[in-house]
Image: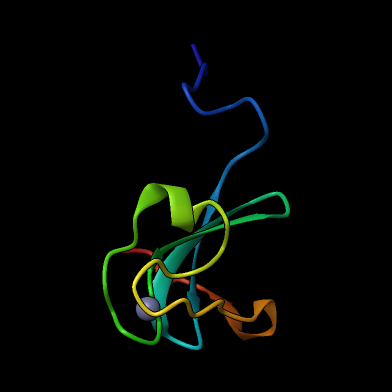
Length: 70
Ligand SMILES: [Zn+2]
C-alpha cells in the first residue's frame, strides 16, 4: 500500500544552493539538476556526479538549502 518506486535508498530531498539552482539529495548523494551558476538544466550523467556539464561548476554542499515546497 505504501510501496514507492524510489524507496531503495531512502527518500530524496529537493534542495537549492542559497536559493539558486535545483538539486536532489538522497542520503549523501547529490544530483545537480539545474546549475546555480549558469541556470542550465544539467545532463543526468553530470548531475549524478555533482557538477554542471555546461560550466563545470561544482556547487558547495555548504550552500545547500531546502527547496520551498511547491
Ligand atoms: Zn553551470
